[in-house]
Length: 143
Image 1: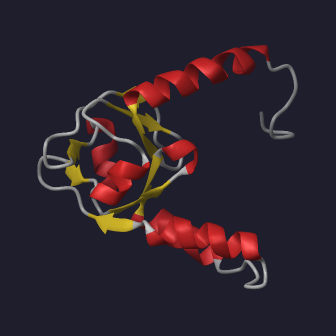
Image 2 (image 1 turned 60 degrees about the vertical axis):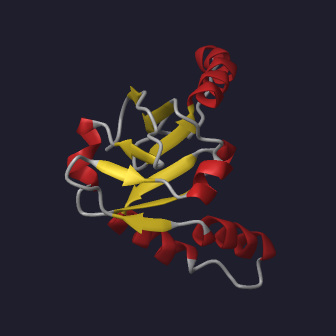
């Protein structure tokens, strides 16, 4: 499970050093792809493969599912972190998430999210008040 928030820097070659707590879980390979709210999602390869298998169950006649999968899968890249725990974020994904030097890397349970640092700060500020005020279950029986 991925937890916490980290603030690494993107180097001039588009690489970031994964937080030490994530490296062992991602050492066997990872997939980076577009996420919602213009962040990037990072999955362990096996988790990504399972998601893709589950997505194949969506009927081809469902246009929304087809379009979502096209965008989600067309931007996906698989990688293995190097010995220093670095990954390279391709230019098209850096542009999608507006990644500059300062990043926010957050653990989101089954995935890691990579955000433009300012975008993450704005998102969190917008969501924290609603989070603190929530008085009913979001996921019935769980939260």
